[in-house]
Length: 155
Image (cartoon, rainbow, N blue to C red; front, side):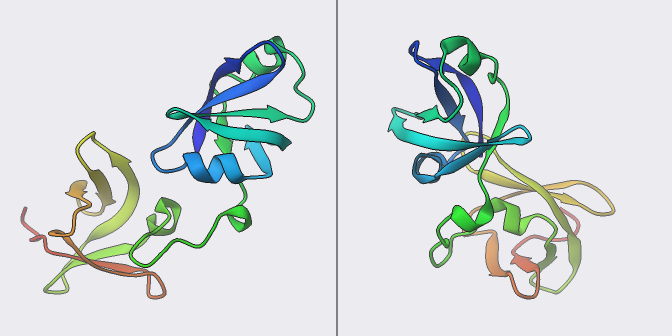
């Protein structure tokens, strides 16, 4: 959901660079997993585009800096359910992608942003990059693990 960007102040607060859209969830979480270790969040808040937090067991700037660059995640159960038409990216990885004719285009390998929009990378007989926009993504069926898109197989 993000990375530790460094320390914040001199009293052991950490500064996180959240992934796109993850800031609010990180600030609300009671526990952060940094690397392979869980830390209880004593206090956290949004600070511009970053999230800053005070973690149990991290008391100095040096301890906070030692975490710099580490991946930050939270347990799935601590996240709110996404609203209608919204999805956690992790739920989309592995879904089969077919076009409107039912032709298989591949399986979602990952999603990322290119600055203008989110992009799906598909693994199949070849790698495909599809924009995650309403004109392309027509239906997401999580129970059946399938995404229907307006995209031709020869594009």
